[in-house]
Image (tube, rainbow, N blue to C red; front, side, top):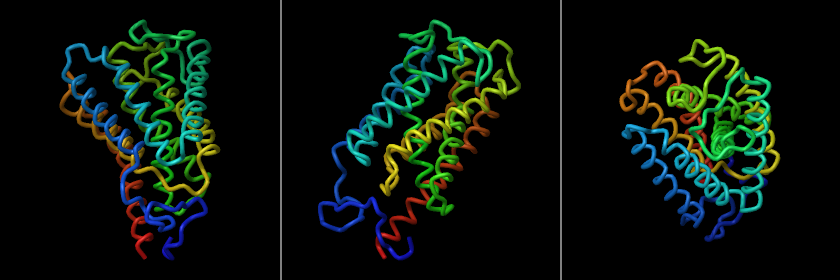
Length: 277
């Protein structure tokens, strides 16, 4: 990176500088930015709503379409769509097995709040695996610039980054009554087995996304922005917005997701400096 040479997947931008950042944002990136702003707005409204669960489906849908738009800007429509689809499919399969066997997350059931459902699994849950899967993978891809790691490093980092999001997600969804645990656990009612299961499924999601998207393309700043926005919103939400606030979840989730976000932006900064040399 210090030589400033582009990677094997570098492309030529509108000015003809191979591997340089685009002078103007692409249509998918502009679309992704608009969708990200809409998602943040919906999240804020949800946090202030007396019945926040009713906006959950809209928020997840905006998250997923936002992630797809940013991914299209980086990987192209075919690879972006394929990566999202396989991540959604993997997430749905894990949830379908989970509600029937308790593996790999632990025994749980979805309530009727989230609709529509397929085989007892809300569709938006599968979409969330895909949208945040893309964001976590891009975050890990950017962070590997700091750690100077390869494919295995970014897959493991991506899985950990996605699991870090669940430190917010499960306490929030449990308190909203979207699912119930057969045997409550020590982390705001969530069993520790859930996070082991999340890590395992996240590893699978990262392997699938990486197999489709990897090829030298730089990390999408839009997807990293999406991951960062989720980290910030959830931290603020649990710290001061939700009733009652939950400082423990705000600190645990904020620190874990924040570490990945900071590493990713550090990596993006280093890459930009290398392009200039």
